[in-house]
Amino acid sequence: MARRGAAVSAVTLVLVQGISFGTTLVLARLLSPAEVGLFAAGTILSGFLTMFVESGMKNALVQRRDDVEDAADTVFWATLVGGVLVALLALAAAPLVGLLFRSDLAAEIAAVTAGLFVLQALTIAPDAIMVRRFDTTRRLVIDPIRSVVFGATAIGCAVAGLGVWALVIGTYASALVWLLGSWSLARWLPGRGASVRLWRELGRFGLPILVLSLSWRVRAMAQTALLGRTLGESALGQYRYGSRLGELPRTAVIQVGAFAILPAFSRISDDAQRFRRGFVQAMRWSWVLAAPVTGLIVALGEPAVVVLLGERWREAGTFLVASAAIAACVGLHEVCGEAIKAAGASTRLHWISVIVLVAGLGLLVALLPLGLLGVGLAASATEILITVASLVLARRIVGFPLRDLVPLLAPAAVATVVATGLVGSFEWLTGHSDRLPVGWGILQLTGLTLAFAAVYVLVLRVLDPPTVRQLVATVRSKLPGGMVPDRT
Image (cartoon, rainbow, N blue to C red; front, side, top):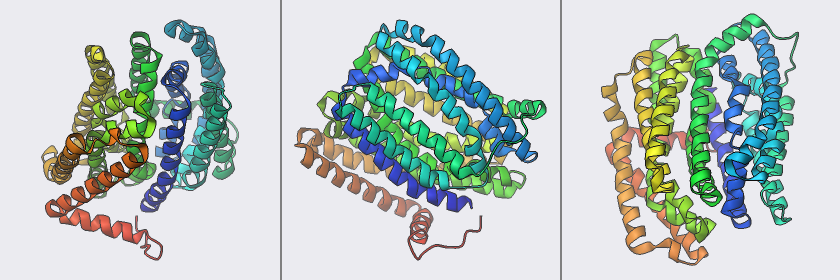
């Protein structure tokens, strides 16, 4: 079932990310960096307050092994109450957002988007239930529809001249699709009510996850506030879209397996050998898929942003390249984090929270004078520190010595360096895709991307033939007519 879930995630993710990427490109042509920056300013509290709505309850319900029905009811009522309270808090805080960014429009956006917290709260319990049973219908049906609805709504409103409000309306439309789809497909209704005992138990498990999520959100909120205050709305818009473009390939790498990792790890965490074997496999594939993403961003990131979005978005490309290390690292620390949660040792995540806040904010403040380049470098350095700490924390839980990392990671790392050096050298010394007409630029970037992939696979085949053979066999098995029995 874990393999089937990952396969469905992969297929769906190609579609969803393709739609999201297309939407991003079109909106970048219709909206200015300042308008995108205003949306980022107005929704600065959304990520932070969202964590109080979810409060680690979703992960706690997925990991739960007994009293599941009563726990699901408890999660539903607890998160609904939390969503209403957070929405009221966001509404009350809207004027402060306006003062922070010196913008009445930012305050209006903050007030109008407060209702999103209630909509999100209503999706948490049904989503967790589907994840528990490896139900892929949400990813197969809801996620693509959400992407289409957001894109169609936001683009239509932008064409109509609604500016930044196009993003607000599109976000609400997407949230409503998520809500209706989750309840339709989960085939579940809340029962008799919440249990205080279960709420406490779920809360104890979810608290470290909540703290970790909050640390990420505080860091992101600080970045948004510092950029908006010191560099202006245009730079904030560049940061927003640079981050967005970087998230597309990172999300693709993580979500292919993340849908199944936590429930799968939770089921085998009592079997030391299976747990370690699953952990090593997840680490291997996250690295094999993620490392070349970082290399490709370094080699082609900035010219690709200019070709696709236009010259006015070049600074977004600068940020994208500077933050490229995130793509290679995030899969590793996500696998470690899921292993820690599955083993019931979520309190260890407090160490990661400290690093996110102390190192993340410290590096941000130190490197902010370099502008978006400094913000990107701070993000990359923080991600590297988090990954190292995650590996140290997870090694005893799964019985994985750190010395085994070298043979596990080295082949893909070497292949990435070789591919990045060859393709990047051609682009920066000879190709100059960003100086070509858009059509020719896209054609050249496509060719260079294929060349990068070919070099990466060829070098990896020399250094690690079993991994390439397994990759080819997996792809073939998932093609029509080539499905293999699922033994997970």
